[in-house]
Every structure is written in C-alpha cells, then in structure tokens.
Amino acid sequence: MTVFVNFDGVTLTEGTDDATTDTSSIADGTFAPYAGTVPAEDVFAAFEAIFAPYPVCATDVRPDEGPYAMVVVTADTSPYGPGVGELAGIDCGDGNPKSVALVFENGSVDTAAGIAARIAHAFAHTLGLEHVDEPSDVLNVSSPGTSFVDACSDLVGPQDPVCGAQHEAFCPPGQQNGHAELSALGG
Ligand SMILES: [Zn+2]
Image 1 (tube, helix red, strand yellow):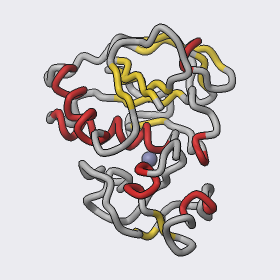
Image 2 (cartoon, protein in one colour):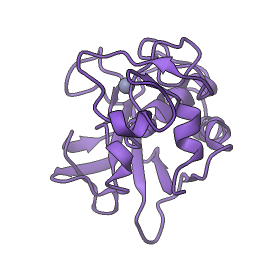
Image 3 (spheres, helix red, strand yellow):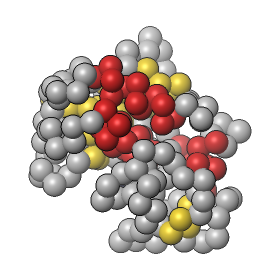
Image 4 (cartoon, protein in one colour):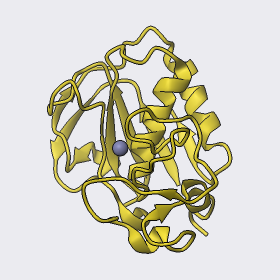
C-alpha cells in the first residue's frame, strides 16, 4: 500500500480513479501546487507520523511505477465551493489501490499537524473508512484529530454505512475502529 502525497500540482482527467495516469472520478481540471506558509516537507513529515503504525508507504515524490494512491494537496478552492475542504471517494476494502483524493488548502489550517490530518482523512476515505463522532479521530468530520483512535466509534453521515462489512470485522454495526482496520491492511 503506497500513497503519493502530491504537493506539486496536477491536471486530472475524468474517469475511473487511476493515480498513475492522473485520472479521477471526483474532480477534473488543473489544480495548483500547494502554496501554504507551512513548508510541505513539514506537512509530509506529520502525515508520515500519523501513518507510521500502519503498513502504508508514504512518499512525496511520484513513484516510478504503480499501483499507488494519490492525495493532491492544492492551493485551489474546491470546485464544489470553499466549504469543501477535501474530496475523496469511500473505497470499501480498498478495492482500487489507485484512488485519487484532493485536499484544498487555502490557509485556513496553519499547522503541519492540522494539514496532515486533513490529508490523512482524505486518504483514509480511499481505504474505506467513514466519518465517526470521536472528536480526536482523524475521521471526525468537523475537525479531524491527529490519530486513528483504537476504539469503536459511532459512524456519522447522511447514509447508512457504505462499508459495513469492513467495519463489522472489528465493531458492532454502525461503528468503526479506524486503527484496527488500518492495522489489518493487506493482511
Ligand atoms: Zn471526510
């Protein structure tokens, strides 16, 4: 499991997600490079720290070959409006290892840990994780925490859990343990 955190800008074309060809089902067009005041290397280091406990290889340089997922971190505003900070499809069981997600970073978050949490949040959706009500969890929707909590937390969202079978390997229906699910990746 490899994730490429792309701070360099990208032009996405529409289609089934394929990070290796910059193809995305959720956004298309050109997105500007990250331009925040927090250095990209500091943000990336904080992202690596969040995923250090899990079998995930993170890089901020595009790999020579796939498969890999990609999170684009752009200075642009979301095509769905400034209130949308992240775009990512919920990919149950990581059925597609070449998912593409976006984080729109316009300066509203000004710490490396805070920006990294948003990148981790978007990437976690591409691994089938959904929103939870636990305030300190990365999957908290209103203000992502900086770790995946090792506990069953209530799922929140407008719809029934999309990836129920994935969550119910570790928790009762309607709950999710993101730490446990990430620890089991590829296992
Ligand atoms: Zn989300």
